[in-house]
Image (cartoon, rainbow, N blue to C red; front, side, top):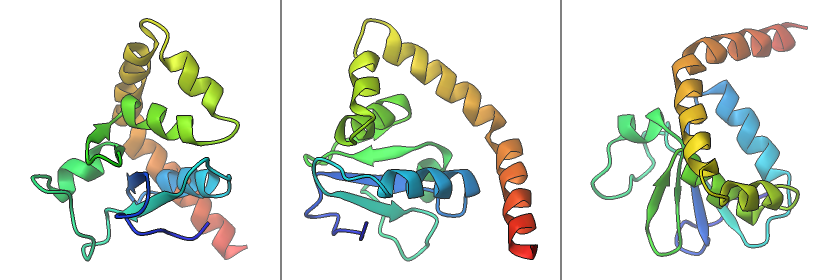
Length: 133
């Protein structure tokens, strides 16, 4: 799916293009046919303009998504907004709106963030193995 302009996309996905896990996940999302255009922005690229008042380190530390109105969502809330736009994932977004579910997803995401550096190293090793074979 081609990248669209952040000014024309209903949702702008801000992701860490240096993270092998993030690249794989974004490739999966890009392979789907969303209800509306999505703009994928690699925040690890230093040429990328950042949302006002945000640092690159802050944006790389968690998953973010910008709504058409400019609101920046982070963590589980960002994933839920993205899932709502994707076919085959909308059911998960609907479930997240049940009482307590988004809160639980956020707690799970925070746990994942603690494990993320180890998982990134593992994924990078897999990528290197594939490239060498």
